[in-house]
Length: 252
Image 1 (tube, one colour):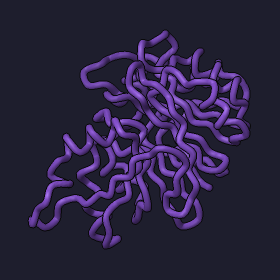
Image 2: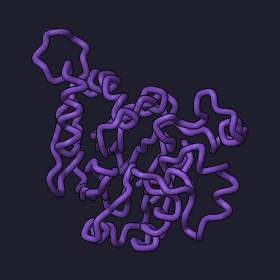
Image 3: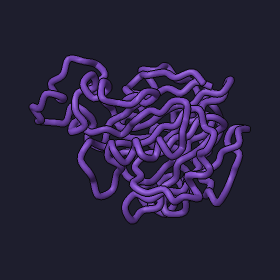
Image 4: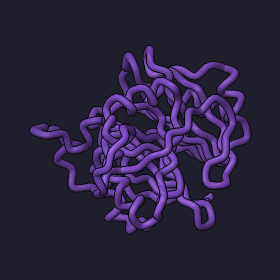
C-alpha cells in the first residue's frame, strides 16, 4: 500500500489569497498546501479520497493515469469541486466513475452536479455511478469500512482500508466508531489549527483521538495557515505523529 497526500490544506489552501502572515510567505514547500485529498494505491488499484477544486492540478502533477474509485467524505466544495474533471478518466477508462458517499453527500452532489445525472445526449459530460454507503462495501475489489463522524451538524464519513484509515473535517467520532479504527497502522486525521474550532478538530483534540486509537503512525491533514510553520509545529509533536504535507508518500 502507498498513500500519497495530494493536498493537505483547508478550503482556502495555503497560502491564503492576500494574506501576509509568516506561513503564507514561507519558502518551505511543506507550507504550501492544496485543498485536502489523498490517493491510496494498492497494487494496480488507485482509490481517491475526495476530489476537490485542485483535482486537475493534483492529477497532472502526480501523473496519475487511472482512478478506480472515489471515496467522498462529505460534499463541501473543497472536497467535491473537482468532480467535473473525471471526464478525462471516463474517456481513458471507458466507464463511469464509481463514487462512494453517504446519503447527505449524495443529495448535495445530485443537486449541484445535476447535469451529470440527468438524461442527456451531449457527448463529453462527466459520468459517475453513485453508491450510497450504509455499511462495509467493496471498492475496486478492496474491502472498505466506513467510519461515521460529525462535522459540527453534518454527518461525514472516514474510511478504513486494511491498515490505513483516513478521516477529515471531523470534530466528533463516537466511541463505537473509534472502535472500528483499532489496529490500524496508519491513521490520517484532520487538525485545523492549535486553537479550538466549532466544526474541526484542533491539534490537541486530534492528538487525543490518535492516543485513543494507538496507530503506529499518524498524519495530520486539512491544516490552515493558523496551524503555524511546518518546521516549528513538527518539533512540538509526540513521537509517531507528523504533519502531512503535499506530495508526502507513505508506504504501508
